[in-house]
Image (cartoon, rainbow, N blue to C red):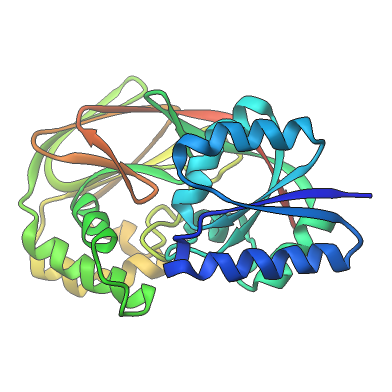
Length: 290
């Protein structure tokens, strides 16, 4: 008989993850599995929860958004434990990259019948994260989204924050090192993307692949601010790479330096640049569609 430990962030999706966790547990129970639920008290509890899951011989089921998946990534990597992801946060961009259904019941079926697949993660300092590391206007956007009241739908929160961020953020001088290449420019951001998506569905790095051991590093120069605002729909379609202000490089290690800019990863603050990130090939065992 299969055994699952459903671990949820009770704050994800404005508290929606609590009900999602209960519904997913019911689905798994109906499939004949034994299930328990834990509502995580925070990042400091993640390692203990995963260690306990491994000791009990259970499969981890992570319920939450990108921040929750990122929180669990380090312990899952350290203990080499398989996991299913149930997207229930505001962004859910890593789940989107992996092709995990938005419907929670369809996602729960992957916990029972999914194929274990190795996917890349990111080492940044002493943390393991999953989607992307970035520093620039998108840092400001993440800050605005995190401090928003939640009264608007999540997609509208990101879109409004993107416009506000572009209006507020002053271009900076960047130095970006991608393996042995160096790029220096004045611009709006630099993104080391493992996942192609961020910002609630923006296809920022359309060629990114979580199985290739490489970042797609997207660097955005300081073009006309209003043109960038009008071009925001291109980010969702992934057609922005034709913009002459956009440069893309690929590599396994990235260092971003930009004065006065705080780096973020998966929507959460890391601290001021410089920030160094490297790909951890095949670091996570995730249950996905075959």
